[in-house]
Amino acid sequence: MNTPQHPKTRGFTLLELLIAIALLGILLTVAVPSFLNAIQNSRVTTQANDLVTAFQLARSEALKRKVPVSICAADTSAATPTCGSDWTEGWMVIVDDSGVGGANATYADFDDDVIRLWQGTAGDTTIGGANANDFVRYLPNGQIDIAVGAAAPTYQMRIPDCTGPNQRNIEVSRTGRANVERVECS
Image (cartoon, rainbow, N blue to C red):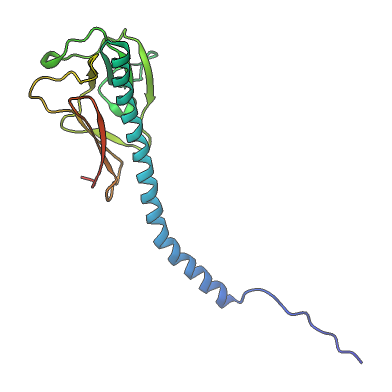
């Protein structure tokens, strides 16, 4: 007579499952902070590159149009964006044919032509700094309109709970070139 064969049972034992869950917990504990750091770094890099692009556009438009062109913090609370004082709301590049420069520099006229508007920063990113002006005016020769002896504008871009080298400093030289530097969070 033939005895019935029992099929081999497949699966995990309770002990194997507990070990796998413990290993997964350890891996997540190590991986999640690194992943969050990568996300922070990527976000601030993208936003800093957008701001540098705006400075480059303003400079190239001033050279091309042979008129002053400004980049300013955008006030988007009204139906038509105007120059404001909070860079986190966004920024815009405008043809600024009204400006008085140097030591008497004033905001650009609100009636000037908007070349391009950027939306505000995401994730509570802050933009500030000791020399972070509300606007930068480019002259038709591509240089920035700045008083003699004044420091060139530097914008510090950082995200909340910034750790490590995840802050960006954007410096606009007197010649109008914008450079980004990755620095330790302050």
